[in-house]
Structure formats: structure tokens, C-alpha cells
Image (tube, rainbow, N blue to C red; front, side):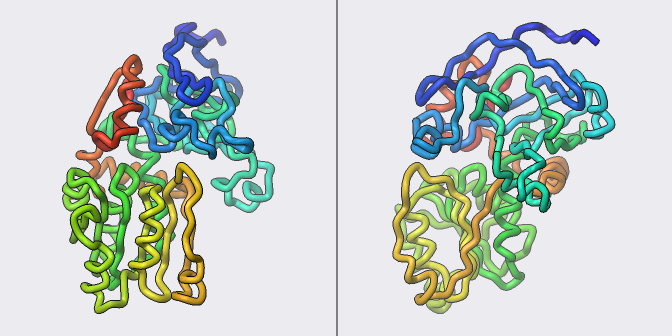
Length: 357
């Protein structure tokens, strides 16, 4: 059946470090079990900015980027075309909202076959490689292998662009195994860190502390459920946490800033036998004295990657405002102003910036 969609669309295409262009490209068509959605909003992630800036993890010898590709892995859209069998496979209909998880698993590697699809060895994520175009465009295709979720029509359609980062935040908090008496520190209150504050609040810890160098972000962290906010530019946050815990330190520390100083801060701030969750994406190598991890404190170090199994919870939390996300999106820009959005993110202005085609 011939597609009724336009032949061309606008899209933000990455070609190389610092070389992102608004171009007119073909609108994708739905093949067997594939979905085409009209993009409602696409978020700019800190990872997008690091790729744009040319960091090693994206553009080095083993870098992740493979241009040209349409950027963007945070998006929400309305289903406008379904390939053969797509409605049955993915459980969506024309006109409904749908989101695809940021990774499209290969289904064949040892991780996919054991159910750990978010660690897929091929690791195709929207928006960085030419084989999987992202959502900074008017339309996007969800492949047959995509992990797709229907989104209720009652959700705020722009807020729904936060589903992907909130799913990541919920997974990171789950990795911390937070108990009801735990003192929990979330370091870094960007979009992901704020989502973690909201998710951690639902665990009802003994005390929830948010740390960031920007007062605006700390104000929103308080709004989202932090009991205490600390700014390391204004006070000795390590001493503060140690003093309030009788010198022991926090029970759970979640690093969400991607800044090396937050790692060192956490290792000093956390108690013996504590749980350290590392989520942040770093622009370069980070060095610490690993002795504290073993001989010093026997810490439980846990990584956190993507949002496996947490998309339904993220959708529900945004739709019902169990997690108050309404202050996170600070800028809405048209695709034509994508460079302005990247610059705002790079300079730490605002929190979440979304592009609206």
C-alpha cells in the first residue's frame, strides 16, 4: 500500500563533531512490522551535546557515532503508518501515541537471548548511527525489533518527551536498592538527576539529599521531593553529610552529573558497605584511588544504563504526576533553532530543552 505521508521532511542530521545540519530528507516508510510516527517533541540530552562537541566516546577510534544520522533518542510521537503485522506485534493503532525504547536490540547476541536486551552487544541506539535514525525530525521509524510502548492519550504530549530520561532515572534508583531508613544522595540535578530525585522520593528513604552547583536545579529538586539541597560551590557538602550521619556517611550515593569531582565526592561521602550507583556519562577519563572501594570501605559499586523494564512506570508517573515533572522542561524550540538548543544545554542554561517539529 502506497504511503499517504509527505515525501520529504526536515531533520537534524549529524555529519561529524560540531557538524549538525537541518536538512530535507526522505520520510521513512513502514515495512513489515514497522511503525512510522509523527514526532511531537524530541529532547536534547547531555549525551547529544557530548557527541556534538566531539568527545572521545563518540568520535574516537572505537567511537559510537556513525554518520550521517538523524539525531535524537528522546522523543514521543503519534502513530501515522503501520506496516504489515505492526499493529498486532506492537499493540498500537493509527492515531495513538507510542514511544520506542532508546535501544533497538539485535535479538541474537548472548545478552538479548538471556533477556538482558539493554546490554545488547550490537547496541543500536537511536540518533547516533546511520542505521538507526533518531527523533529530531518530523517523522521517525520504529523498526520491527523495537521495544515499543503505547502511551495514553491523557498524558501531556510535550511532557511525554521525558519518558525516556525518566525511565533511565527509575532504573538507576532501582539499582540503589534504597531502604526506608537510608540517607540517599543524588549528585547532579539535570533532567536525569531530577528524575532520580522523584523516583527516590517514591521509595520513602530516611533522608533524600540533592547536590548540584546551580540553585535553580536545587529549587526544582526540592519541589520534586528532596528533603535537603546542597551546593558544593557554597558549602562543604562532604562535611555536611558526614555531620548529619554521625560521621558515617550516606547509605546510597547516585552519581548523575558526569563530572569527575562528583565521583571523588561520593567516595568520600558514602559510608562503609554503602552502595554507589554510577550513571553519569563523562567527557573523558576519571581517576580515583580505588583502594577506598575495596580495602577502605568495601563498597557495592553498581552501574546503570538505559531504562530496561521501567518505561511503563515512567509513562504512569508522568501521566498521573506521581513524579512531578512539570518544571523540568524549560525551553521549547522549533527544529530550526536546534543549534540554539545545543548551545543552551552546553552552557547549562535551563534544564530540559525540547525541539518541537
